[in-house]
Length: 221
Image (tube, rainbow, N blue to C red; front, side, top):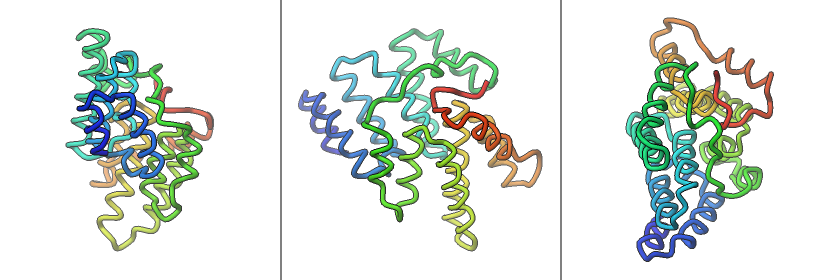
């Protein structure tokens, strides 16, 4: 990842993007790394490819870990990219979509940054690297498979607190990738924190079953 920064700083931004693609395939854990997204944004910006800035920002939002710092940085990157490419009004529109799932979301039709064939990245992920494989499945848009993997992580995490926390975050990330907001993801985590309210997981499972080809470019309306 640091060579992506180095190549960008040397003005070799196209090489930096090529290196990032190779890194994503070799180390899919990077696909949830805040610094990796920042490095990609810098490389795309340096390569003077403004049409791809939003694709990087959406990649960060869809794939970021479900922890406060990561979510904040991803949201800030989206706001930065929207403001730079379409103006502050569209950034405000995005903020409103985070409070109301029925509001227009400017990320809806934005493609993810192309880091290579999703199926190839999934195939290259080691079976034992479940978090890396989960990242690859999210990148590939195979949300139903990603959800099943996260559920399996939860089933096998009994008695190991950190593994359970990771599994729950990964399940929340499935909501985030599908909805392009945090509303149901937070509802899901709150349900498992307190036992109160409604568990939205069956609803998500039904949606994915009804639309098996759905991708992160198609948020819940």
